Amino acid sequence: MDERRDPEPPTGSRQASAGRGKLSPPTAAWNVYVQHCRSCKPCKDIDQACPDGARLYELWQGIAARALRSIARGA
Image 1 (cartoon, rainbow, N blue to C red):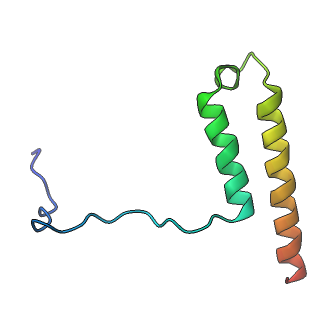
Image 2: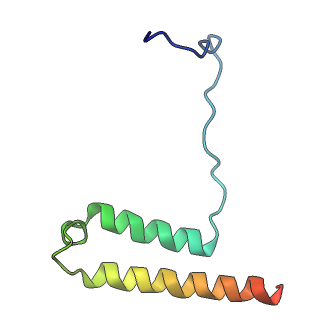
C-alpha cells in the first residue's frame, strides 16, 4: 500500500520549483512578520509579549489596508 503513485522523473530532468518573482508589498510585509515570529521565543509563547512582533504586525496591517484602498479606488 505504500507504493509510490507518481512515476519517477526521467534521469537528468529538473524538479519544478517555486517562482522567484517579486512579492507584493502586503505579502512581503506578512513574510517578514511570519519569519520573525518563527524565530522569536516570546512570539511563540501566548503568555509573552514581543514589541517587535507587534510592530511588524501593525506594519503589515497598514500596508494591507493601503493596498485594499488602492484596489477599491481602481488604481
